[in-house]
Amino acid sequence: SQQGEEDPQALSIQEGENATMNCSYKTSINNLQWYRQNSGRGLVHLILIRSNEREKHSGRLRVTLDTSKKSSSLLITASRAADTASYFCATAARGVSSGSARQLTFGSGTQLTVLP
Amino acid sequence: NAGVTQTPKFRVLKTGQSMTLLCAQDMNHEYMYWYRQDPGMGLRLIHYSVGEGTTAKGEVPDGYNVSRLKKQNFLLGLESAAPSQTSVYFCASSYLAGAEAFFGQGTRLTVV
Image 1 (cartoon, each protein chain N blue to C red):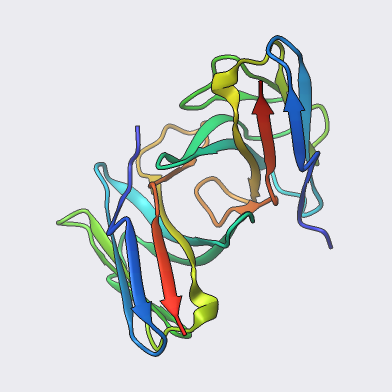
Image 2: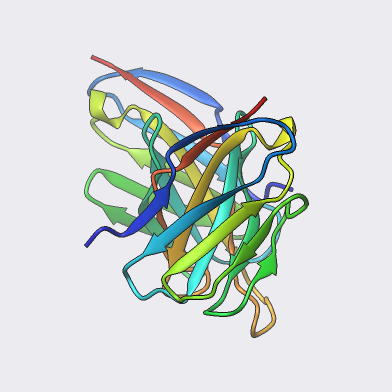
């Protein structure tokens, strides 16, 4: 079952605009991560936000986390055509017993298209 | 420093054939994972390993086996391929459970 669900499934914007993607999850988490996947390629880690953090920045990326609503958002400012990709949120569960991997659970992704 | 390398990149199998996908990482990571990615489904965890000699089942383990004989390698086997196993397979590794994962480029497998 998918822990994270992204919204929207697809987003198309003009270059220079901001893009916002949302992620909702179901259980308590240790952290939430965002990944990017270019067509035909592997996933690349963008940013990690811990459960006790509310906001984090990295370059043109801004991530927020609301644990009371079990949701996160990824904002890409001043988008570029090169930002066209699929974006996935992934959650690492909290409270997993020692000796087992706190493996990441991925959502189904948002396909972002930035038009030049 | 290659990161995570998967071989092969593409493969076509006939139903009932077997094959092994190889994943190698050069980052000395303890944790390694095999995912499959299907359209509209995101990534689903097949099997994972928390260290050399260990393996564990993920969300969709049926029809697959894995081995971690060496820390740097994680093998995914299909004993008798089925069309439902047509997918893109990704290997990943991380230095801690739940930490940033590093992904390979993927293996596109088609079972006819």
